[in-house]
Length: 105
Image 1 (cartoon, rainbow, N blue to C red):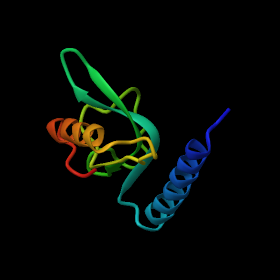
Image 2 (image 1 turned 135 degrees about the horizontal axis):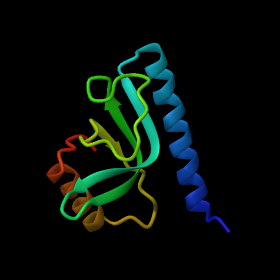
Image 3 (image 1 turned 90 degrees about the vertical axis):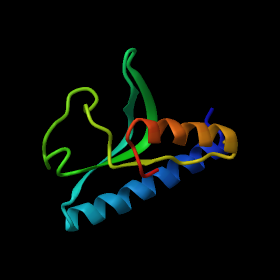
Image 4 (image 1 turned 60 degrees about the vertical axis):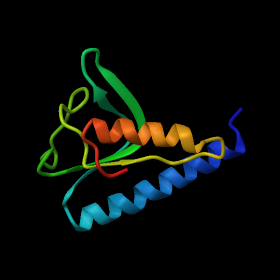
């Protein structure tokens, strides 16, 4: 059974992706990807699941298919907080993003 907060979070995520995709179709600046993983460390590889990422066309050319995880960090990571999120966890997550080269969260 899906919780009310998970349903609401999913709707927020879907609406956000629609708006970003609409903007990018009119302004082909890059690619948005929903619910994916980003590499936040190597040796051993560490990947964090994120709600969405944005990759500029300079990092991933438009229309290019990527197999696996891109070797470079995305330009933007989008997280959608739930009612159970806490400040300490989010601060640690953001620190991991910044350390891995992701500067906009």
